[in-house]
Image 1 (cartoon, helix red, strand yellow):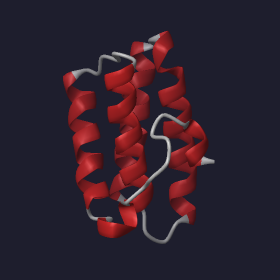
Image 2 (tube, rainbow, N blue to C red; image 1 turned 45 degrees about the horizontal axis):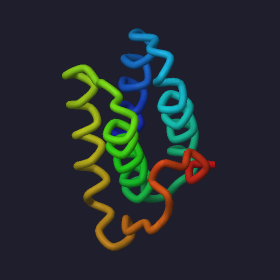
Image 3 (spheres, rainbow, N blue to C red; image 1 turned 180 degrees about the vertical axis):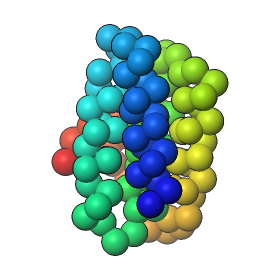
Image 4 (cartoon, helix red, strand yellow; image 1 turned 60 degrees about the vertical axis):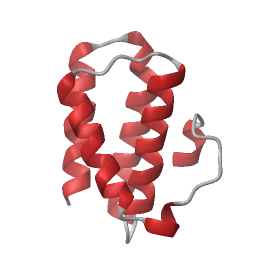
Length: 99
């Protein structure tokens, strides 16, 4: 599964930088990684993940490396396939949406 590999690579890349302000992002990535095996269609989940990452980067001024940005963009492309199923009207900043 392509999205699971991307989430895994992004998690590992962020872990190497060990920024303390990235702990919540790493926690969400881990939740999504574990959940990907249990969902039939990963696009809506990946869409929420990409929105969460973009929102966190903007509001908390998180700095992603060039490689991390490329991985997030790949996730956004996968999430874009969700179409109307990806429409999500909840709090983008909440990590609880991934429980």
